[in-house]
Amino acid sequence: MKIGIIGSGHIGGTLTRRFRELGYDVTVANSRGPRTLGDLAAETGATPGTVAEAANADVVVVAIPLRAVPDLPAGVFDGRIVVDANNYYPQRDGQIAAIDGGTTSARWVAGHLSGAHVVKAFNNVYAGHLASDGKPAGAAGRIALPAAGDDPGAKKAVLGLIDELGFDPVDGGSLDESWRIEPGTPGYGPHRTAEQMVDDLAAARRD
Image: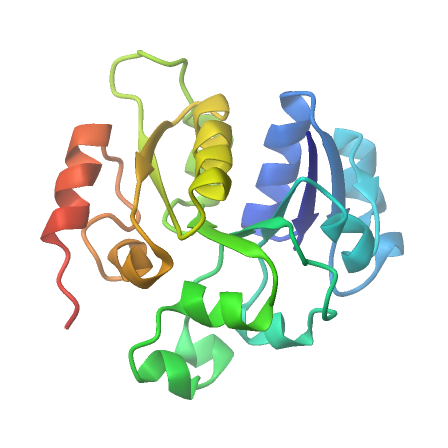
């Protein structure tokens, strides 16, 4: 499987490292261009590329400020599994009327990445935990990470990657239910077992 990472910040950089540790062919891109990714590429063995080159993968992780999603090149995500690892922060992203009106950020992202099979994941975990807290399947205290999406096959693929990274995968429902793992909900941020995460998803309230 080939993995593309768009965004080289905390989450994007960490996932580049982790997926390379697992032996995946990874192409990483950012808004500043491949020449700025030399250090990360040298550290990990990932290939620095353009956004279009990173999008030419089996699974593409988008980990950039939400406000930058509409600037991504149109069409390059058609038919791709795209992991939306973003969160909506108005203080950073500005006010986005559709999200303020009740559309989940993942649904909004899917609207801009027409033709992609969008799955919401990796947005509710801190980069440090993602880097170092993975454990083998069945290990005591293994942390759970949810994924939400409309396409069953795409969601299954992302849940499988979560498991490989050392976390218990939990089905987080559809894109319209992905608000249950957004900031301010019980399942956002804390260490949870799979059973606890299921309870957190059920307990979430959309105020």
